[in-house]
Length: 174
View 1 (cartoon, one colour):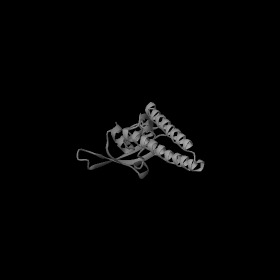
View 2: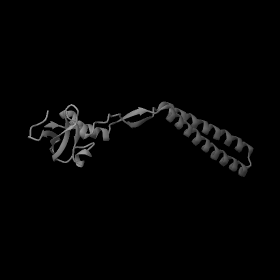
View 3: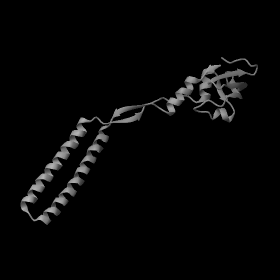
């Protein structure tokens, strides 16, 4: 019997890959800068509208000039702060690591036991990324150079991730 624990772990890693932190791409950084510009533009429009409406009520030239200068200075400070934050922080994102796709169960059995064209009941054949339920299954493999001769075999799966392949006399195959 062969241990299929590493194969099961490989599928678990493939389905739930580990993650890593990577820097944002230039396009993602550019999108962030564009978003900052849009926010600043919207803030400028609302601030200037508020200053203009307030100046119209006060009707004081000095107040209007001081409000305009103060508003412009505040917008410039917010712009510098936004640029500083974008430049000083190295934004990263979490991505899944590239994990190769393991072989399906039947392909892995064919590889481990050096057999060809394993054909089993649907419960075994549909097991792509997990071991089939523990038990014994009647299967067929091809035998011979032309692969036209069929040979009955028994596939045994245990609850502790062990798999065995036996010929019709009960002798374990390679």
